[in-house]
Length: 106
Image (cartoon, rainbow, N blue to C red; front, side, top):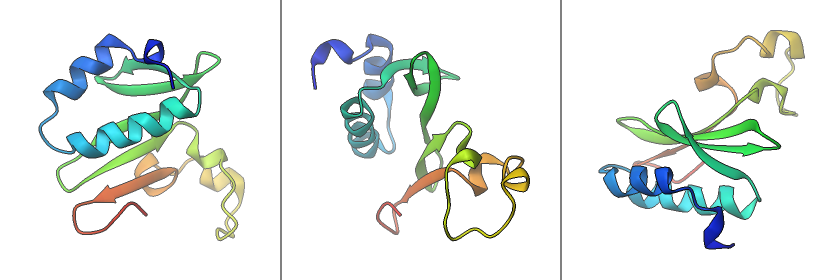
């Protein structure tokens, strides 16, 4: 990974982060290693491919998460519901990867 891919606005976000700092840095490295473009959107690090949002890093009180834009479009072999129904699920219930203090990333 090259340093030129790092966005200074995200550097500022990382410096100011109190909770989840180590986890945010690890998630940032993963996103940058996927050749995604880094920016700040909605006051959080956002990663894009061809100017389209792919994933957002977000911290909450009890966990941090990768929020995938249009996560309902991701294939889930364990989900038997129709894809149309999945399209309207809130992001927290589908398309997120959660890291909590009580468990490792799942």
